[in-house]
Length: 99
Image (cartoon, rainbow, N blue to C red; front, side, top):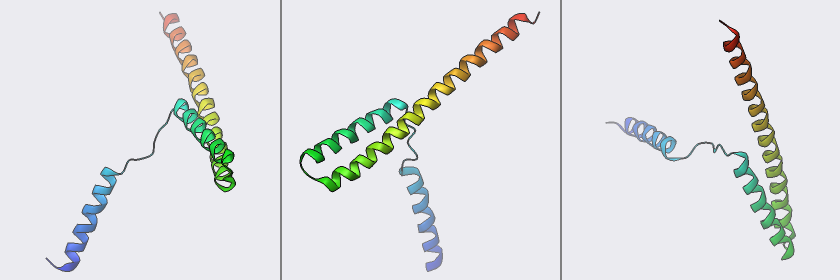
């Protein structure tokens, strides 16, 4: 094998292993997002009480973003639930009336 072939094989093997071992995007529910927002808020408060203002500001921005993501996810889940209930009701009615 030439050096080029070895490097190509090594890089392909490394990329396949990295894709298999590194976790993908986390799909958190609204409860998980709420817990993250609470944890970040507590860390923000802790840093503010210990007069570490830079850390508190950065964590505060993270908290605000986590709260925004939580509310977006909660709205999405409510919307999906309403749609599912609507589809189940209308499908049931259609099946029941067809004879």
